Amino acid sequence: MLNKFGKVAVLLGGNSGEREVSLKSGTAVLKALQAQGIDAHAFDPKEQPLHDLESFDRVFINLHGRFGEDGCMQGALEMLHIPYTGSGVMASSIGMDKWRTKMLWTAAGLSTPAFDLVSADSDFAAIEKRLGLPLFVKPANEGSSIGISKVKNAGGLKAAYELAAKSDPLVIAEQFVGGGEYTVGILGEQALPIIRIVPKNEFYDYEAKYLRDDTEYLCPSGLSADKEAQIQAEALLAFKTIGCRGWGRVDFLMDEAGQHYFLEINTSPGMTDHSLVPMAAKVAGIDFEDLVIRILELADVG
Figure 1 (tube, rainbow, N blue to C red):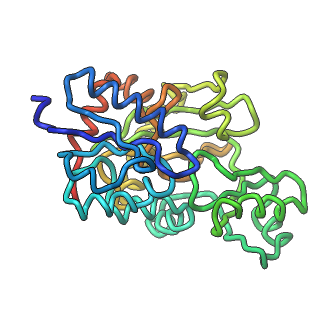
Figure 2: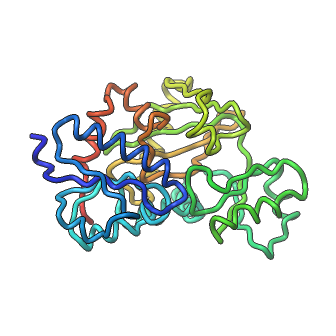
């Protein structure tokens, strides 16, 4: 039955700031597919011309960040009429843009931390006053916490903005929500068990995600069964509001009073040994090899 997939390209690497993470993710997926007898091959768009994909029957996208997760690659694959994993062009593009994602979620009645767009001409003191301190500043169109910083002292927003603006001209400042960091993976129509993330450094930054071994991942999350079910249902709504399909991950925060706030969506989650979707899938009884097959089965065009 596995030969129904034909020749499969596993896209990895790419040109974004998340290249190294993508190489790890893609290598893990490639090995899992090949171990099950699938005719899978690594394909790095940084090293190979896209028209070479015409010889493949299906594509497993393991690219993260720009040119892989933002709708560009999805559009190219649609032009080539090759089924691919994950969300389509529009959802991938919106999901990469934290600002527009937040606006759609707000319109759908979903809670998200208060935020402001920041530019070089902004009244930094006024934004600090409105959102309160501490606050987070991040590029709107980067992943893996690239360019993010926590502003703890008055007057610190300007420097944080300048750091984020090196990664993306669109920068957002976001209210701090301090009751815990969580994530919920999505696989088809299923919300996976929620994971609570407990970093040992100040917040869940690039180092905590990929380089440290002391970050704690709690699954079960410690939430009540009713609260977990409520958030899983809302996470599916958040996923569908953006127009996502296939698989993904929705991150959220909790405040001290137990209110949850959706933070951002990831339409091409990591698949490394530190990654969250495989971790949640395992708790749900889905091992890594089964997970990659189920994701590949959901590949589509358009």
